[in-house]
Figure (cartoon, rainbow, N blue to C red):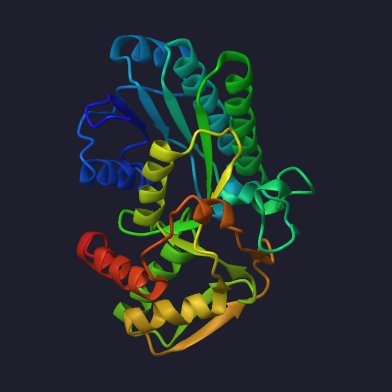
Length: 311
């Protein structure tokens, strides 16, 4: 991939896509192609094919997806599976037909079985039942992985697939109805501090363990793998370190200056008991994350105050 290569970043407005655009530009890749949602519906295969034929991107980053937390997945299961399947099939097929040199597909750590051995190796894919609270999204992402591998095998598309752990950072979704746990807790802590509340309710028991990766680290890993990795085997991207949801909530409370009580609502679902990725395949290639969780949370808190809290 040369610095003047034509690179299409699908989903450039999202948390991941915008971070990948920033990382590409920092590293001298300025010839980026993007489209707004009202300009191109990636669920439409004919429109997507016309776009590829007209723009002729050489490299594609497929970061466009419908994403959300437990509540959103439970409320809109059909949207989560249909929209993601439609985006994947349209983009991967168009990329192969128009001779794209390389495509990066962004999956998710939720593709792995609910009770996979920890830390989770890439070989755990399809070895057991999924976590029910996000199975619709997970099944769509698994289909995307297999689609990329099938197009590699049959059509020679150089498609690589990354499986990021839980992501966070500036530009995240803080909507209480659709956000993931970390931004949801930032929103709750801010609202509690502003209201002078003495308690914040956290979904679940607080005991599940989760791993969190700053989105800028994920973006740098994506560019690194676009430059240095060409295998169809999936690659986990994470920190290799996890903590409990209780510890996460306590860390966010300190960043927010919330000194009240944390109440854990065990009637709400916990999700997978633990989800920690084995990142040895990635670290063996020479890449490691840079942003410590406490620093990343503090940065995300400041971004939330500056960009969202006043709205």
